[in-house]
Length: 386
Image (tube, rainbow, N blue to C red; front, top):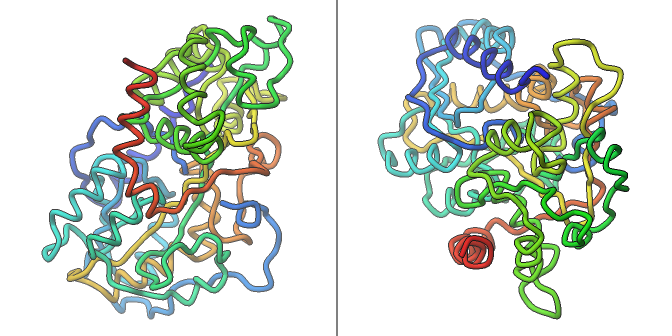
């Protein structure tokens, strides 16, 4: 089976090479984009579509827009060119490691920002970003078309761009061969029939690993008869595999995408669609599926914000408008395998068939994540690894 992620990364490299130099990548274990709520993911016509930035062609001629981003940023060259032609500016994408590292670099550069806008801060890092006061408030007119539940900052210091869902994928053929029916509850995964069948990522080193841990915290809670730590203790006893990152888990251990022996893997809701889209030979069905268990899916929202003291603030605002426009939003699904924040934006047809939006998702307040992240990670390590 073709490794669709490697194809995605190759395409990304070609696009980014055409629109500016990038920083040296770092070892991020969760490269697959994460990538909305059900309303944001449905491809239903909206009363109006988000429009492009109200700029005159050539208004920003000679200026270079620097977009600070995580390494997973990808958009088609045509979309980049559309903005450049509309504004007269040049776009440079400054890849800065994973989402956490890109944020750290931006915080350290406060007062002398690395670029004009920062894209890729998600809801697990949002409170930290806002507390650092690195963003200038900007309310794009296109925000009116974005669902209210995605707008997590009342001051509009950041704007939601896309949404992804971390969930459990399963290998259809492997489960059929083993005669196993799909589990219907997370606690089913602690039963004997699922012993040694699930690979997860370490939340301390992996974005989807962190998201899945947060999902279990939100679902089971920290107090009561059965807590999230009880669940992970039971998973450990049931011989789960802990991988350092997503690529190792998905392409090294998950039988649905490799020669691995684990038929269940923590990945993304869009992964089955990607398997079809990047298959070496045409497929009539996805070889993998999503379990979408109650409490087993975590919503990741990615944001863009105008950096304070940016060299080109008006150009940065125009870019934010553009990221929320239909032209950009209808391209990101097939580029980054996330759901657009704009409800009227198009997504690949394979999303409708194989990338279902979970009907039940776990969300935690960004402030709660920020306040408890390190403690939760320490408790997870004590429960699972020690």
